[in-house]
Length: 295
Image (tube, rainbow, N blue to C red; front, side, top):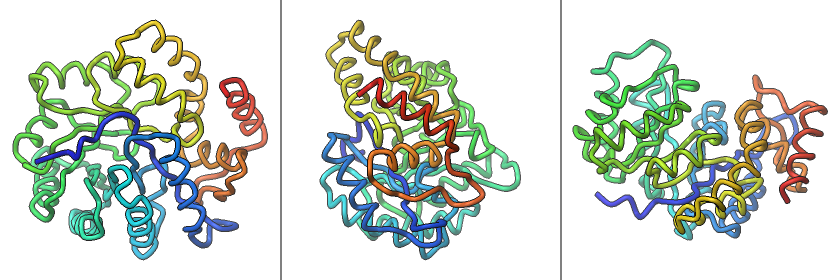
Protein backbone atom coordinates (compact mmCIF):
# COMPACT_ATOMS: atom_id res chain seq x y z
CA UNK A 1 0.00 0.00 0.00
CA UNK A 2 1.42 3.40 -1.02
CA UNK A 3 2.11 6.17 1.49
CA UNK A 4 1.60 8.75 -1.30
CA UNK A 5 5.26 9.68 -0.80
CA UNK A 6 4.72 11.23 2.62
CA UNK A 7 8.05 12.69 3.66
CA UNK A 8 9.80 15.82 4.83
CA UNK A 9 8.15 18.51 6.91
CA UNK A 10 4.57 17.61 7.89
CA UNK A 11 2.82 20.70 9.22
CA UNK A 12 0.19 20.33 11.93
CA UNK A 13 -2.68 22.79 11.74
CA UNK A 14 -4.43 24.63 14.55
CA UNK A 15 -8.22 24.84 14.80
CA UNK A 16 -9.14 28.54 14.95
CA UNK A 17 -12.04 29.68 17.11
CA UNK A 18 -13.95 32.91 17.42
CA UNK A 19 -13.87 34.84 20.71
CA UNK A 20 -13.96 32.63 23.83
CA UNK A 21 -13.63 29.46 21.74
CA UNK A 22 -17.35 29.27 21.05
CA UNK A 23 -17.39 28.72 17.29
CA UNK A 24 -15.10 27.46 14.55
CA UNK A 25 -13.45 30.01 12.28
CA UNK A 26 -13.03 28.08 9.03
CA UNK A 27 -12.00 31.13 6.98
CA UNK A 28 -8.99 31.60 9.22
CA UNK A 29 -8.26 27.87 9.10
CA UNK A 30 -8.09 28.20 5.33
CA UNK A 31 -5.61 31.04 5.59
CA UNK A 32 -3.44 29.05 8.01
CA UNK A 33 -3.44 26.09 5.62
CA UNK A 34 -2.47 28.34 2.70
CA UNK A 35 0.40 29.74 4.75
CA UNK A 36 1.74 26.26 5.41
CA UNK A 37 1.45 25.17 1.79
CA UNK A 38 2.97 28.40 0.50
CA UNK A 39 5.89 27.95 2.91
CA UNK A 40 6.74 24.65 1.21
CA UNK A 41 5.72 21.96 3.70
CA UNK A 42 5.46 18.50 2.21
CA UNK A 43 2.21 17.39 3.90
CA UNK A 44 -0.43 18.71 6.29
CA UNK A 45 -1.98 16.97 9.29
CA UNK A 46 -5.24 18.42 10.66
CA UNK A 47 -6.91 17.58 13.98
CA UNK A 48 -3.92 16.35 15.92
CA UNK A 49 -2.96 17.59 19.37
CA UNK A 50 -2.17 21.01 17.87
CA UNK A 51 -5.60 21.06 16.23
CA UNK A 52 -7.40 20.33 19.53
CA UNK A 53 -9.25 17.41 17.96
CA UNK A 54 -10.03 16.01 21.40
CA UNK A 55 -11.90 19.20 22.35
CA UNK A 56 -14.26 19.31 19.36
CA UNK A 57 -17.78 17.96 19.14
CA UNK A 58 -18.38 15.31 16.49
CA UNK A 59 -20.07 17.88 14.28
CA UNK A 60 -17.15 20.31 14.67
CA UNK A 61 -14.63 17.55 14.00
CA UNK A 62 -16.45 16.65 10.80
CA UNK A 63 -16.52 20.28 9.71
CA UNK A 64 -12.80 20.77 10.27
CA UNK A 65 -11.87 17.49 8.61
CA UNK A 66 -14.02 18.08 5.53
CA UNK A 67 -12.99 21.72 5.18
CA UNK A 68 -9.28 20.95 5.60
CA UNK A 69 -9.25 18.15 3.03
CA UNK A 70 -11.23 20.22 0.55
CA UNK A 71 -9.08 23.33 1.07
CA UNK A 72 -5.78 21.49 0.81
CA UNK A 73 -7.18 20.09 -2.45
CA UNK A 74 -4.37 17.57 -3.03
CA UNK A 75 -1.77 20.33 -3.20
CA UNK A 76 0.10 18.22 -0.63
CA UNK A 77 -0.88 14.94 1.07
CA UNK A 78 -3.37 15.23 3.94
CA UNK A 79 -3.03 13.06 7.06
CA UNK A 80 -6.09 13.36 9.29
CA UNK A 81 -5.81 12.41 12.95
CA UNK A 82 -8.84 10.22 13.71
CA UNK A 83 -7.98 9.18 17.27
CA UNK A 84 -10.84 8.83 19.74
CA UNK A 85 -11.58 7.13 23.04
CA UNK A 86 -13.46 4.22 21.51
CA UNK A 87 -12.70 2.02 18.53
CA UNK A 88 -16.18 2.64 17.09
CA UNK A 89 -15.69 6.42 17.12
CA UNK A 90 -12.19 6.15 15.65
CA UNK A 91 -13.57 3.91 12.89
CA UNK A 92 -16.31 6.45 12.16
CA UNK A 93 -13.77 9.25 11.90
CA UNK A 94 -11.44 7.17 9.72
CA UNK A 95 -14.26 6.31 7.32
CA UNK A 96 -15.36 9.94 7.20
CA UNK A 97 -11.82 11.17 6.46
CA UNK A 98 -11.34 8.57 3.74
CA UNK A 99 -14.71 9.41 2.15
CA UNK A 100 -13.78 13.09 2.02
CA UNK A 101 -10.46 12.39 0.33
CA UNK A 102 -7.78 12.09 3.04
CA UNK A 103 -4.56 10.52 1.79
CA UNK A 104 -3.87 8.84 5.13
CA UNK A 105 -5.10 8.81 8.72
CA UNK A 106 -3.16 8.93 11.96
CA UNK A 107 -4.23 6.78 14.92
CA UNK A 108 -3.31 7.10 18.57
CA UNK A 109 -4.48 4.30 20.92
CA UNK A 110 -6.33 6.75 23.15
CA UNK A 111 -8.22 5.16 26.03
CA UNK A 112 -9.54 5.83 29.51
CA UNK A 113 -8.60 2.33 30.71
CA UNK A 114 -5.09 0.97 30.30
CA UNK A 115 -5.18 -1.30 27.26
CA UNK A 116 -3.51 -4.68 26.86
CA UNK A 117 -1.34 -5.33 23.82
CA UNK A 118 -4.09 -7.53 22.38
CA UNK A 119 -6.61 -4.70 22.80
CA UNK A 120 -4.28 -2.20 21.12
CA UNK A 121 -3.71 -4.57 18.22
CA UNK A 122 -7.47 -5.16 17.95
CA UNK A 123 -8.05 -1.39 17.84
CA UNK A 124 -5.72 -0.97 14.87
CA UNK A 125 -7.09 -4.07 13.15
CA UNK A 126 -10.66 -2.79 13.38
CA UNK A 127 -9.70 0.58 11.92
CA UNK A 128 -7.54 -1.01 9.24
CA UNK A 129 -10.35 -3.35 8.22
CA UNK A 130 -12.74 -0.40 7.85
CA UNK A 131 -10.73 1.75 5.42
CA UNK A 132 -8.45 1.46 2.43
CA UNK A 133 -6.06 4.38 2.97
CA UNK A 134 -2.73 4.11 4.83
CA UNK A 135 -2.59 4.47 8.61
CA UNK A 136 0.18 6.27 10.47
CA UNK A 137 0.52 4.55 13.84
CA UNK A 138 1.14 7.23 16.45
CA UNK A 139 2.99 6.52 19.68
CA UNK A 140 2.71 9.38 22.16
CA UNK A 141 2.26 8.25 25.76
CA UNK A 142 2.18 11.86 26.98
CA UNK A 143 -1.25 12.35 25.41
CA UNK A 144 -2.63 8.82 25.10
CA UNK A 145 -1.41 7.31 28.36
CA UNK A 146 -0.25 4.29 26.35
CA UNK A 147 3.39 3.63 25.51
CA UNK A 148 3.74 1.06 22.76
CA UNK A 149 7.00 -0.89 22.74
CA UNK A 150 8.93 -1.21 19.52
CA UNK A 151 8.06 -4.90 19.51
CA UNK A 152 4.34 -4.14 19.73
CA UNK A 153 4.59 -1.47 17.03
CA UNK A 154 6.25 -3.97 14.70
CA UNK A 155 3.64 -6.59 15.56
CA UNK A 156 0.89 -4.15 14.54
CA UNK A 157 2.83 -3.05 11.45
CA UNK A 158 3.12 -6.67 10.30
CA UNK A 159 -0.44 -7.66 11.21
CA UNK A 160 -2.43 -4.71 9.80
CA UNK A 161 -1.88 -4.10 6.10
CA UNK A 162 -2.99 -0.45 6.28
CA UNK A 163 -0.45 0.43 9.00
CA UNK A 164 2.43 1.55 6.83
CA UNK A 165 4.02 4.38 8.85
CA UNK A 166 4.99 5.11 12.46
CA UNK A 167 5.11 8.48 14.19
CA UNK A 168 7.30 8.22 17.29
CA UNK A 169 6.89 10.94 19.94
CA UNK A 170 8.22 9.47 23.16
CA UNK A 171 11.32 11.66 23.07
CA UNK A 172 13.52 8.56 23.23
CA UNK A 173 15.86 8.45 20.26
CA UNK A 174 16.68 4.81 21.02
CA UNK A 175 13.12 3.90 19.95
CA UNK A 176 13.90 5.12 16.45
CA UNK A 177 17.20 3.25 16.30
CA UNK A 178 15.45 0.11 17.50
CA UNK A 179 12.70 0.54 14.88
CA UNK A 180 15.40 0.71 12.22
CA UNK A 181 17.23 -2.31 13.61
CA UNK A 182 14.35 -4.67 14.38
CA UNK A 183 12.32 -3.47 11.40
CA UNK A 184 15.34 -4.09 9.16
CA UNK A 185 14.96 -0.63 7.67
CA UNK A 186 11.54 -1.49 6.23
CA UNK A 187 9.38 0.61 8.60
CA UNK A 188 9.00 4.27 7.55
CA UNK A 189 9.08 6.34 10.73
CA UNK A 190 8.55 10.01 11.44
CA UNK A 191 9.77 12.20 14.27
CA UNK A 192 7.09 13.70 16.49
CA UNK A 193 9.32 15.23 19.17
CA UNK A 194 10.57 18.66 18.08
CA UNK A 195 13.82 18.76 20.12
CA UNK A 196 14.86 15.41 18.62
CA UNK A 197 14.61 16.55 15.00
CA UNK A 198 18.30 16.43 14.17
CA UNK A 199 18.91 13.11 15.93
CA UNK A 200 15.78 11.63 14.36
CA UNK A 201 16.88 12.48 10.84
CA UNK A 202 20.31 11.02 11.63
CA UNK A 203 18.53 7.83 12.80
CA UNK A 204 16.72 7.57 9.46
CA UNK A 205 13.42 9.37 10.01
CA UNK A 206 11.57 9.91 6.74
CA UNK A 207 9.91 13.07 7.99
CA UNK A 208 9.27 15.46 10.85
CA UNK A 209 5.70 15.97 12.09
CA UNK A 210 5.77 19.45 13.58
CA UNK A 211 3.51 22.29 14.64
CA UNK A 212 6.56 24.55 14.52
CA UNK A 213 6.02 24.84 10.76
CA UNK A 214 3.26 27.34 11.56
CA UNK A 215 5.86 29.73 13.01
CA UNK A 216 9.32 28.89 11.61
CA UNK A 217 8.71 26.86 8.45
CA UNK A 218 11.82 27.98 6.59
CA UNK A 219 14.13 26.84 9.39
CA UNK A 220 12.32 23.48 9.53
CA UNK A 221 12.61 23.04 5.76
CA UNK A 222 16.23 24.19 5.62
CA UNK A 223 17.16 21.62 8.26
CA UNK A 224 15.47 18.84 6.30
CA UNK A 225 17.19 19.80 3.06
CA UNK A 226 20.58 20.11 4.79
CA UNK A 227 20.14 16.54 6.05
CA UNK A 228 19.18 15.34 2.55
CA UNK A 229 22.30 17.05 1.19
CA UNK A 230 24.36 15.34 3.91
CA UNK A 231 25.58 18.77 5.01
CA UNK A 232 25.76 17.90 8.68
CA UNK A 233 27.56 21.07 9.78
CA UNK A 234 24.80 23.21 8.27
CA UNK A 235 22.10 20.89 9.66
CA UNK A 236 23.59 21.17 13.13
CA UNK A 237 23.76 24.96 12.94
CA UNK A 238 20.17 25.20 11.69
CA UNK A 239 18.92 22.87 14.39
CA UNK A 240 20.53 24.74 17.27
CA UNK A 241 19.31 28.04 15.88
CA UNK A 242 15.70 26.90 16.19
CA UNK A 243 16.05 24.71 19.29
CA UNK A 244 14.95 27.40 21.79
CA UNK A 245 11.66 27.79 19.90
CA UNK A 246 11.22 24.02 19.61
CA UNK A 247 11.79 23.57 23.36
CA UNK A 248 9.42 26.40 24.22
CA UNK A 249 6.65 25.00 22.03
CA UNK A 250 6.97 21.54 23.55
CA UNK A 251 7.04 22.72 27.16
CA UNK A 252 4.36 25.38 26.75
CA UNK A 253 1.82 23.11 25.03
CA UNK A 254 1.17 23.03 21.29
CA UNK A 255 -2.24 24.74 20.97
CA UNK A 256 -1.21 27.37 23.54
CA UNK A 257 2.11 28.36 22.02
CA UNK A 258 1.29 27.95 18.33
CA UNK A 259 -1.91 29.97 18.60
CA UNK A 260 -0.07 32.69 20.50
CA UNK A 261 2.63 32.78 17.83
CA UNK A 262 0.13 32.96 14.97
CA UNK A 263 -1.78 35.72 16.71
CA UNK A 264 1.50 37.66 16.93
CA UNK A 265 1.95 37.40 13.16
CA UNK A 266 -1.45 38.97 12.54
CA UNK A 267 -3.38 35.79 11.83
CA UNK A 268 -6.00 35.92 14.58
CA UNK A 269 -6.75 32.28 15.37
CA UNK A 270 -8.28 32.81 18.82
CA UNK A 271 -7.32 31.11 22.07
CA UNK A 272 -7.23 27.40 22.84
CA UNK A 273 -10.46 25.89 24.07
CA UNK A 274 -10.87 25.30 27.80
CA UNK A 275 -9.55 23.59 29.85
CA UNK A 276 -6.39 24.81 28.06
CA UNK A 277 -5.42 28.39 28.89
CA UNK A 278 -3.95 30.89 26.42
CA UNK A 279 -0.30 31.86 26.80
CA UNK A 280 0.26 34.49 29.50
CA UNK A 281 1.93 37.84 28.95
CA UNK A 282 5.38 36.71 30.11
CA UNK A 283 5.21 33.70 27.81
CA UNK A 284 4.07 35.82 24.88
CA UNK A 285 6.98 38.20 25.41
CA UNK A 286 9.41 35.30 25.59
CA UNK A 287 8.04 33.69 22.44
CA UNK A 288 8.07 37.00 20.56
CA UNK A 289 11.71 37.54 21.46
CA UNK A 290 12.61 34.03 20.28
CA UNK A 291 10.78 34.46 16.99
CA UNK A 292 12.41 37.86 16.43
CA UNK A 293 15.81 36.24 17.00
CA UNK A 294 15.37 33.57 14.33
CA UNK A 295 13.68 35.60 11.62
